[in-house]
Image 1 (cartoon, helix red, strand yellow):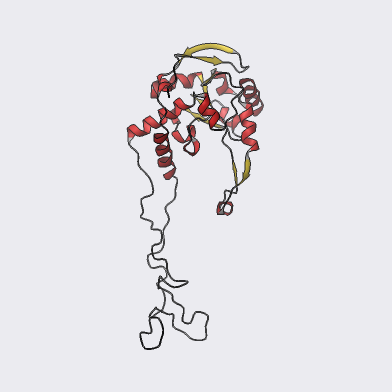
Image 2: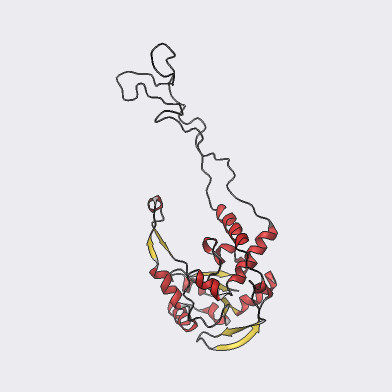
Length: 264
């Protein structure tokens, strides 16, 4: 699936057509979901903190087998009498309360590697996916009011200083509906992760890509689901959260020109 057009419209902050510019060739890249998934998983693996166990865990004990002739299993047992731990199998792996047979090891290699050409293909493919309305809609974004994809706006968006200005611009551009969707889709996480510092989860909203941050990150920082990133720091996970390509993305005009220099 490729995009077949050479120019793209640029809108001002009121949602009106300002001009038309040439579309970078990176948007003509074919959509490779398998490569995108591989790149995102590799990127996520670098965030995992290694963990391990003490190599002699469960072995600091006086446990010893009593041998044969007593009609008992020959498992090591803690020495002692008239105590709760008397007779407990301590270092045996097959007994309740015993040590783990194959615990996590700190020296395990967790970070996944990916070839350079695969990584570049993944980010180019993820960028191209932001220009396809069917892919953006199938991902769950509310993009019915967006006039054209990819959505490009004038550089004035980089200089917005407060959240009210960002909200007004998003309403005129048709993006505010997706911000409200992200705010509504906030719920409690299933599973034990609720007790590990990530009780709540929410949907991912629009991504704003700029060439230079002149205050927009601080202005849009508190909007639910909205992320702001410079084009030279763009990564595949930002464009395809959860390995699913097609995030609703707003490009500034300068970011679009710089995109051609970096990935053209």
